Image (spheres, rainbow, N blue to C red):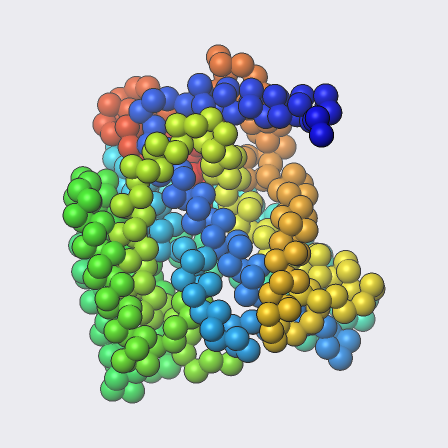
Length: 430
């Protein structure tokens, strides 16, 4: 059946827009960096949508996980728990950006305010909305337990941004730190917790900064050129895989790389040695895939999609749980829908949940349209960004803009956002 003229027109417009983004991107930009960041963000979003269930019971909503009833789903967490790759990329971009800022004569304070400013704006929007929503639910008669469940889930992405902000602020101190030092901290903490059963109850939380500092410092090593060879990726992949298998099979660590409600040990809350070694394997694989990603990103359509994700990465990550909950709450009057309000207790639930993923994505797109301007510096900035995307070759989106001055000469070729300090380019704020 022949396509309608409208469909042909839409496809042609999409291809033309993708070509404009491709042509506006400097040839010096390392597109693999953006591709890895986009994959990490989307992996986390899809993972949360697949393993987070809100079960309607006794007039309220309660969280559950299919991993609790179906432990054979643990490999799903191996695919979608991509935070180590994200911190690898952020460490690489932040250290390169700081070097560029210094080369241009900017102070550490100017650089830090620019990077953290884009994180604060969308967070403030999320907090304001959920303050109003929580108050409205309580006044409307919702149970305190239900409101607590929803607010906790909606604000859960904030822990990630707090760690990110702390590591970003510490970049001058950790830029040359060897990854073995934070790895040693995680090892000793886990030996005390699980091997010797010593130390205070809060000791495990020392792994929160130390665990994510491992891939972050690997990103700094990438900036220094220490991970440019394929051998580095192979070593990380082999060591991380072997260590993780050993820890899961013989040291009692859970197979799931995300938390499971009711489990005695969580690999992620706080991070354990198994989560960190698994992250090393992921980082090794990411480094090995760089050349393939660069080749794939030469095609306009994939590159435009990656650029679009990077343009609103913070907004996507902050609001994806809200999209899930909005879908769940809005459909409650219809009744208990499979895969949405029912307990995640079998393959039928999985099949139904897969069918809900496009709905979650659509609701997230609505949230993105409503709140992306907060990530991009206000409504005017958001509208300006949209106009820049729609114009011809002479006007560049900030996703693809790279400074051509002194900072560029000091390493922008691989750097993502090295040339837009103090105003952080679109898509590099997370």
